[in-house]
Length: 406
Image (cartoon, rainbow, N blue to C red; front, side, top):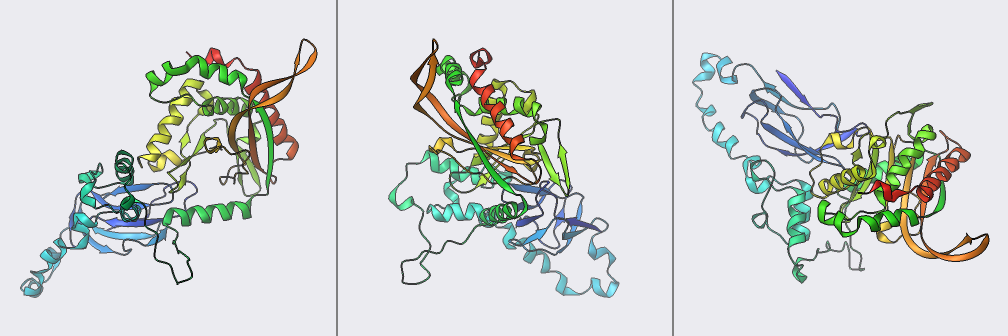
């Protein structure tokens, strides 16, 4: 007998939701065949059978949320159960109809092989599964398939999300948290309760970055397929500043600060207002600006296609949350546990600033944005965080970034 347990989906993930069983009790399973699917606030994942045999027992039903290590099922990887029965049991006719019943179990119905996230998206947009082409295993519909369909289809009035019925006649609409929102809420509350959050911010002149972006221009987008934003320049500057302030690139573990040599940069990605994930660019400090641009675009695109795996969320040491695309002035981000700090990049706008020209004070219009960092005061002090931000600002403002862009 082999027990199948809830796997660890990430270093900070303590539980997962079993979304779908692809087999019923009594079904034969083959090693590496998809047995069930699980999900968290970050990712959905198909889990293959680790061995061949017969699914003897299911202990956790679809839709249940359980902790890592919980026994989900038992596979008999020896002989089929019928071979071990006594002669008297062999002649019992009741065993005959059992197989057709298992084969017609709901988990075998293709229309039911939809995760709760997909079901919710379909319902909110008045869509039927038959309208969507699935790209998952055996044509199964994934979240990214629904989003791709919606983006490629002009929104009709009937396709707008339908509010849930009001709980009473007083004009209120009750919208239950989905699983992703529940787990995000839990993580945010836990982070605020765990870390001593302090916010610091600096204004940064992005003139040199703008010069590099203008140099890249339309040629970059034509070649790469996406625009060159401020984010990869900020990410590169963050990595270089961390080299001088290594305590920023760290975790708090108990009463210890654990600093890391490599910068594994988590980038917060909005999922069309349906949630937030923070996949990781590994060893970002070793990358050039253009490589960071490609890596960030890749993980963001895969996040929106629902094509990320558990490994894409492992090992983050510092996080950047790019709120500037929405025009925000300043944001106080919540630390991604167990990290020490998180940076918000807010909107870059043209504004008048005081400059010195030939020894004389003058006013010039420059592209200026705010970089705001929340840090854990348990681990580092305000002076250390402020010095890091000052160095980050200096790198962005004084480096000749145009040389970094082909």
